[in-house]
Length: 566
Image (tube, rainbow, N blue to C red):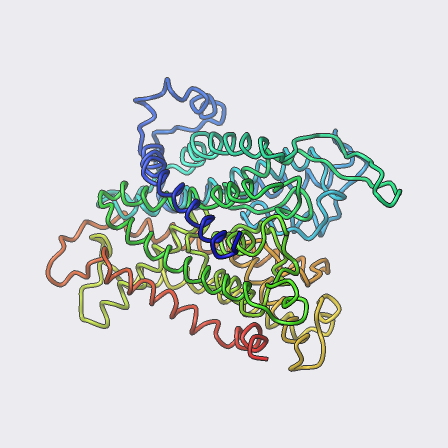
């Protein structure tokens, strides 16, 4: 089949399924987060039991202080539990002789999975036992995703509520509902579909077979299907096998590849409908969706064109940039997967990003540096683009003299300050981490590509470092592939980027939600800037691109742009 036709068919299938699920899933999630438990307790006895066991009053609401404290407390407890589980792995069941995980790797992994980053500086088959994978990592895939959704819903409530004491919901109720009513049912269905495609589900350590050359080969097994489903659905990305979604046990067929792409996009896209439904104006949700779609398709088109071209003898012989790609998926399936994961804070990969062309690799890197809002991770993408909407309204108001209001709430100095701080966290972490790392004398020993300044190897090595810190600070988790991130400096610095990149924006977003919740609604007038429609979509898109361009253009010029121009 012609590659262009294959690409078109795959994209059309993804768009068709997302269009069919957009309204029912979006409205369902809106009902999940607005249903009064007291009126429907018989339908959710499991939840009621959990509330009683944990001594939670589901009718009690929290201000942003209480909500933020709950998020931080739950995440801290999760990180400590996951760290202890890894360190005690050698004395727990299903160890398979792997022993305890080293302190540095255990710290980095605990932080990674609790922050929904899922960065992996280890080989899963030889490091993590099925017990650690199932009880520790898979559980965090569910709850870390539910935390992001809860924060997004809290911000929506802040925009909807008028006056009062500034309550924005109950974190424990939102966490439970997101996990039990949304993530678990969807993950179960997706796991069944993946099983039908040949994804494995086993608690055996592995099996041995004799290869064609007569040598014995040992192949690892794992409970893949159950973790693969939530890995993609929760925009987590941490593979239970080292090759991630390029491994035939995780992603065996072109159909499973499309299913995994759909699983990644399903909730972030439908959350824009949830947003519109909860605020009572679905045009607002469609406007946000249009901006996400425009950014996504632009990066997809650039990456597809770059990878479909030819650079070098090998590419000319293959007819495209096939080095580092699975022949099962080809260029279209690989590019569609790469753009989807880098735009949604999902660290999963089905090809080697380090092997992409300079322009293609730069495009997926830029996809993260835009803030991962196209369409972003579960919850994180929505609250990220809403924060940028606040910035866009403020900028638009300054340009044309309109009143700075967003959905009937005034944008005062406090709201603008909080929005600006939330936006600036990621660039500060990326540029600081990259700058310090590249001046360390030991860094060249960690790079898969290096050389004299200005040479292709040195430029590509810089891109590897920039990509790593962009991935960690955006809680993405994918790697360019050429960087060996096992040193104490990289383990600790990337871990801190994951922590600050996750929780500082959450704190600022919740503070913004609390500030909105205390305000009374301001009636719209002739001086109010409309925030739905083509004009605002253009303003929001321009603001997003402008922020990323001004912030990261010098760094991109030193890396992928310089490499592409050589």
